[in-house]
Every structure is written in structure tokens, then in C-alpha cells.
Amino acid sequence: MAVKSYQRDQAVAYAHQWAYGRNPAFYNYESIGGDCTNFASQCLFAGGGIMDYTHTFGWYYRYANDKSPAWTGVAYLYQYLLRRKLTPGPVGEECDIHDLQPGDIVQISFNGNAYQHCPIVVTAEPPFLPQNIKVAAHSYDADNRPLDTYEAITMRFVHITGIRE
Image 1 (cartoon, rainbow, N blue to C red):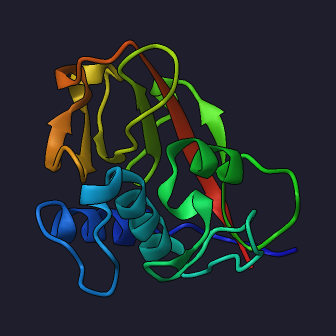
Image 2 (cartoon, rainbow, N blue to C red; image 1 turned 135 degrees about the horizontal axis):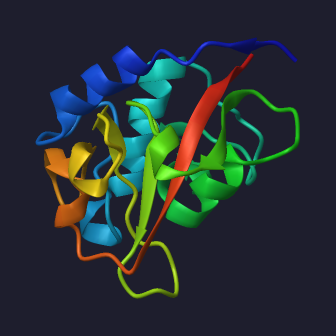
């Protein structure tokens, strides 16, 4: 399966455009559990343009009640991005904070038991410390928010390596 480049600049431009607004093409899940992963997925889609319509285990959005768990669920998106199965859509690998680039994903645990928040990296500058990594997000709407301003117990980082066609 061919892998094309992830257009990080397009993902970041989308993040900046919609960080404090809601694209009417997508449902706003804020009132029913949060909109952070929906927003992160929209950014990933803006940078890749390919969805995986595999029922249940894919990564897609058609409308509010027809989307995959990975489109809106923090843990499901993580599992999807790190999948081994050769299906279309974005792919990634867990990485260290030093390997983050704009367009990558951060997942945050506020309680140490589960990851509850999923912002997208918009700036990553050396030295690669939390105050120099800035993100955009929904649910806790933000743009250019430094990672060190989150009261997190743990964070994990996903570097997007490409888009399978």
C-alpha cells in the first residue's frame, strides 16, 4: 500500500482556522463528551485527505451518527494511528517529545488512568520542552497553548509518519 506525505502545514492551518470555532461540515460533540478528538481528526484529515471506511475499526466521518470510534475517541484514535493493518488513512508512531513536529498529536491524561484530551501540535521549537510545544484543541478551546499549561499527570505523543492510500 502506497504511503503519501502528510501535509503538516495544511493540518496546522486548519487547526488555527477552527481552534475557536466549529466547522459546520462536522458535528460538535462538545455537549456529549467533548470535541477534542473530533477536532484532531479534522486536522489530520486536512493534512491527508484520506479516510478509512472500515466499519468499527476504521477512521471516518460521514455525519454525526455515522463515524468511527477512532474519529472521536481519544484511545481509539491512538490505537488507529498505531495500527499494523495495512488500511488507508493516517499512520503514526509513539515518539518522544523531542521528535514532535507541527501536525502531530498529543494525548493527555489528567487522572493518570486514561487519556482524556487530544490536542494537535501547531509549534514545536527547540529546546523541545513542554513550554516550547504549542497546541490547538477543542473542548478546552485553545490555539498556540503551551503544553506546560495543562495540569497533566501523563502525556503521550504520536508522530504522524504518513498517509496510506
